[in-house]
Length: 182
Image (tube, rainbow, N blue to C red):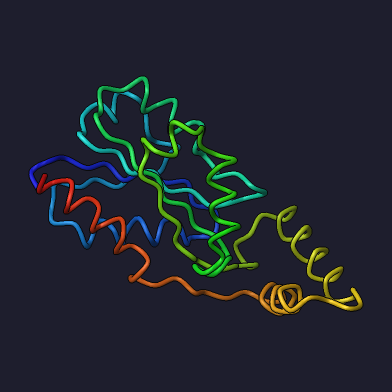
């Protein structure tokens, strides 16, 4: 790969940053990691490709709007996005819906986008997020006649867990490698 890559991310509990680090380790290119808070359009302009990562939070990819604005102000040529979340990778319908809420129909075809399961880390979660999750977990637990999905969800969000894996970065890596060879 003969291009310069910027991986910028917005990470709250650490899953998104961990994936950014895995991606950087996997790529054998001139690759720079930076927190979105420290990223500017001028910084992005020094890179051919920008990869942005953010967590799924309340239906949005946290930081994506700012990352897209910076990219459009920059001279970078390519923009990729990955989102992390607590859902397993087989929740395709929910993940697809999330992408439709965050990317326009044109962006869905123009911006390569990837989902990477992370997990929940109540210990690092902001107070309001933690309270909302705990309330949701309690309401699911109390609900009578739960569906199988609700049963599994209630169990999954009752405590912190980590389902992140290096295997989830491989579609993004394969895309970059194929694009570099084209």
